[in-house]
Image 1 (spheres, rainbow, N blue to C red):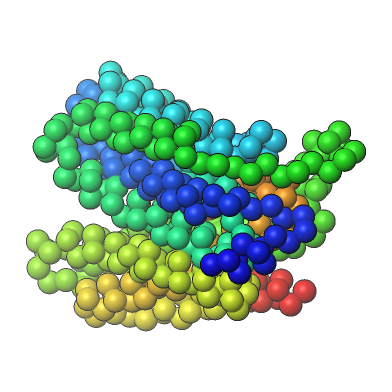
Image 2 (cartoon, rainbow, N blue to C red):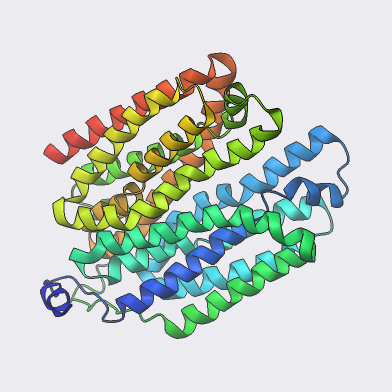
Length: 409
């Protein structure tokens, strides 16, 4: 282990001797906040109905608005939180995000009507950003040659939160009630707040003499000398989420064409959705470690190319298990993308704007998360479900080609 600490003390790069403890706390905090953001998926329509909405169409629309509100507001403020993290430190931003999310979750549990629910979900997105803030802290505090592995481990915790959230949301409300579920989520995030406040140690980078006054002006895009790698990574992050989410609206309908027994359709659809997430959780840290060895660009190009190939047979499967297997393999190949995107940004922008640029990366991913279901639903409804898989495959192949050219340049 000693070789890592000694060799990583490269000039101009500071890493924290506490980076492993920071990583463990950030993983716990990211996991719990993502679980809290996603746990209301299974019972959201029931809660909307409890809050006084009776018409079926209105329940569906309000549920969609309440769920999407958090991601919309989070996408808008991610670059701002990133910039403030660069200026005032990453740890204060994590403390703010965890405390803000704990309070917002508890307040959602006492919402009196559906307007308050949507408003509080917007507030949760505005105050949150723990997971993206953790990525920034881990990226900037970890020895450079361990960044890919550390960010891969972080990605696994985030994806595990996305997987576990809906499961917890399905299990808890029948046991303790819907409102108490939000209180429990708020309490767990409060534990993450305490862990962050007392256990995370952030090494401040030493100020260069005479640079203190000039530093704030050289912020944002103007501080990045070569914007090519950054633009490629923003595009790749959006593409990754778009590819993940484009088939979400059509999965249940598509599975219904493959599974004879109507009673097994929703169960199979749930397994199909979980398979990709499970594959990503298993592969993220391993692909991150591989990227540290063979180069982050190489892993990005490989992951995108393999995903593009795996999407084609998904359009022509004849049984539910085939789709589950292909989605799992696709999850394995996509697992390496998020840590590699963060690593490339981390290594190709100056230290003083790393948080700001990783914030833009988060916003690009949220944009893909919002655009994916809209595009997939439109294409699936108007052109056909197979076209969604083929179209997404073409996009992924284009992304692989662009990254290959960007890397060569």
